[in-house]
Length: 126
Image 1 (tube, rainbow, N blue to C red):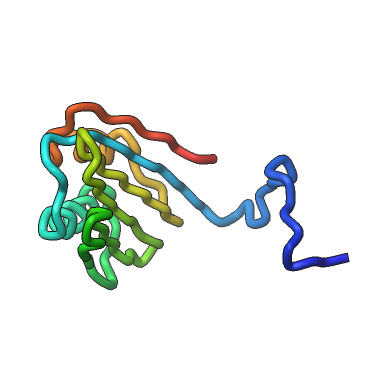
Image 2 (image 1 turned 180 degrees about the vertical axis):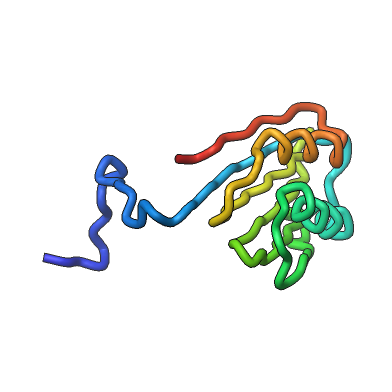
């Protein structure tokens, strides 16, 4: 019986659309200073070029006040979000989801250089 409150186990995951390309990567990095909205917009615009994505809306960025900053860009083939946090050291997180393959290594290298990161990690999700 279907219940809107029932949570399925993660182990029940299977690909519901095997003919549809879906690529997800999360990149996180620490920086010297918090990344502000202008830099987030510039980064998301340039990330589109690095990953060969076509922008159809944005990039947008905003202040979340004491929580930091965020932004997103809508690509023809999905999009990306970026968030920066006033932690010590400051943290920037980029969440990219696309229906078109792209080079994760190019995106990571670009992110490393754009933000002049102190430390960078990434996780490509299956």
